[in-house]
Length: 298
Image (cartoon, rainbow, N blue to C red; front, side):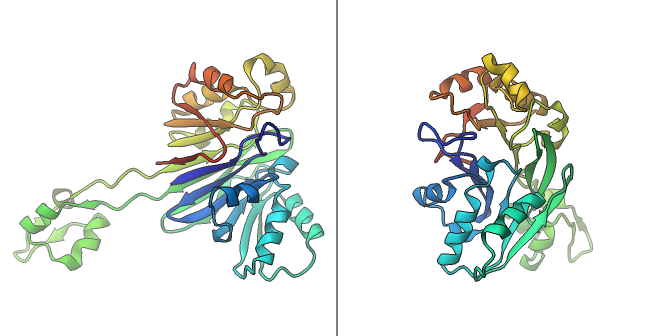
């Protein structure tokens, strides 16, 4: 699983930073998380093949999270895309797109509308799922959770030979089944396999006030992206605008017992970002800044 940061700023492009956008890569399938202004420029700059993206998730209707969407869709059309594109979003986003692009694109856009406080699975495959959960911003907003399915058990070659298990049965062992040998003796699965690697998880909270209510939705994830629009000295402004400070994001990571926190959505009033890291790490040491162009892989 990989997450590449395309934009880490808040409402305005500033200091060489673009508004919010990320690409999540699971088993070479690409997903676009929000599409702020400049997203497709960053994709080109960072070597991300935009035609490989088949699913886009828009967290809410504020412009810094979707104003790059129409331009990106237009580019896909000009490049001759034929495969359908799935967009998961509030109903207003569909309206905005259809008003600006009423002509034939050469491919179908499939909209999956998300209700204001809806919590549901959006994408389900054999290997992973993507679900949404409500967060707490000034307009209805959702976070998204990527969850890898439980991995198959790992075969132990030496033990397979020792118990003379035929190759045709390996796939069943990987699924957790026991084996009955030629003499009718039981060979327990745990004797010839080990646990598969733990499923990987990623949570993207989008824009939200400090909200302990979301902890259950992101509990124990490997990687958490949480907005940190302001430093602590602007706590009252964060509260007023339904945003989060760096220490508050760290508190959420601590409560949710996540493995790593990455922070972004920085207010344009800040040119230097290191103070965000310092404030967060005092509470949650395993914090990193979501620098544009950086890929987090695990």
